[in-house]
Length: 241
Image (cartoon, rainbow, N blue to C red):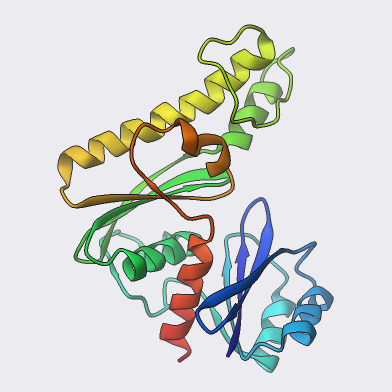
């Protein structure tokens, strides 16, 4: 059984091809046009598909997937393996729902903090009773680097780099130290505060910027760049068995 899982974020549109529960391939898509989606269908012949989208994507792709596969669009109406304590569940991003579903599947007996490093950093806390309590959102790395360039007259736009000094020795390294290590201290600080409140506590780091930040963190974490796709697959199986 082949399942196509789509993750449309603010920065990239990606798809994962599953054969059974195993990820065979992850693809970054050039766009969300029907032609691109049809190309995936023709190549991999999926029986099922699921979409997590936090952007305004082409609605024609949903029609196409619904015609040729057993399709599910992730939303607050989706059947989930956890409950939410959030006041307005319809405001929870689809990407966060997928991450939470993965945490319940792979770390079912722990209090879990899932930290996703993308356009934004999202902190997603779900307790050992599988209740999503909320978390936090702050600017991601690219957003911080672009803001320094955009809102100043002379600061350059820097590219992310994991090899940064504590004490910057020129403008470029000052920016990279401030942004990269500032995010590290933010993340470690959140983890420390959660750890004070909860025992049997587990942290999972995911998202594209984990390669720049993971090695600097002092706290013990699990790193899983494919977590969102594993969550999407689990949700697809629950809603489209």
